[in-house]
Image 1: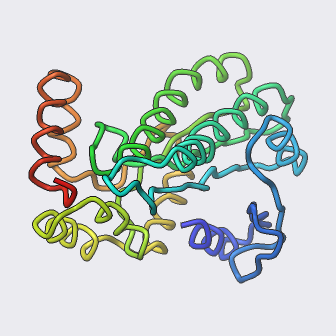
Image 2: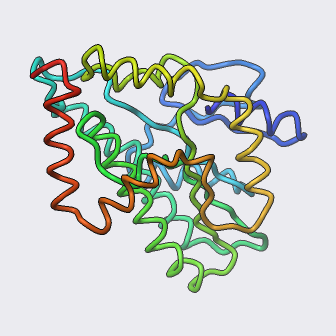
Length: 244
């Protein structure tokens, strides 16, 4: 997703600063590289010294490793939470302190998975739920304090590629086949990047990429009957997990 967004903005004639925890990264998707650990307020301040017009907080992590019983790993839970939620929150808060003579758009890349918890991608879902709630809750405060800083959120769905298969780590054969339909029909990253870039050109605060009807059902179920939804997750784990 990051490289696809970089290519789109290079195509548009922008100067793209690619931010990575890696010290070496090159390609047609960036104009220059900024190596940054993306952990602290100081790291956020270092990025803002570039005086950007647009910051896309796309860095993300999913559960590619799990406990032998399917339980989340402690170190991965800490890392996912920091990268997916905490650092985007810190950067937005640091940006709110700046005085700009032009609009600074801070766009966090969320997920349609933020609508409800899941037993099959629990840490990832929790991080995206936190990101969505933070940007939706703190965004209005920041905007009223500094009209030039806009905290915006875009919620893409699955993107075709190896990472879209990560939830199969917990799925049995039946669940795998259900996931396969979603992964195989997912759009390519370049298509999603173009859609996100067009959305950024507009004025919406929160955007969503083709949310499946089933996701909408689960989102409303979780909101209206959380205890019942929890029971659904318990049932789903028994039926769809390869650890039961």
